[in-house]
Image 1: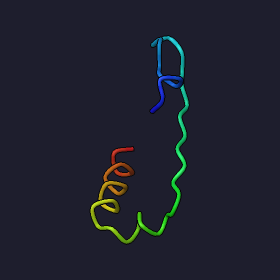
Image 2 (image 1 turned 90 degrees about the horizontal axis):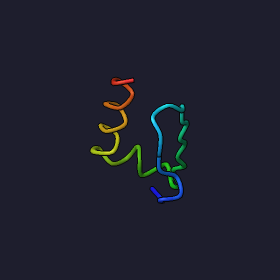
Image 3 (image 1 turned 135 degrees about the vertical axis):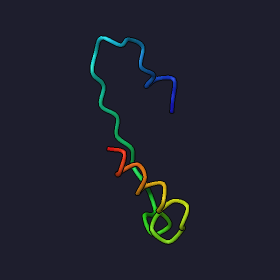
Image 4 (image 1 turned 180 degrees about the vertical axis):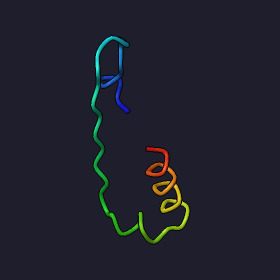
Length: 43
């Protein structure tokens, strides 16, 4: 993450988005697929 987008205060709400380029790798590599599943289960 760039220093330009660091959170500097805890009083405000922040929304962060990411962009994934080349989605096919996310779904064909087992370790990446498991990471996404764990993150969604946590949410």
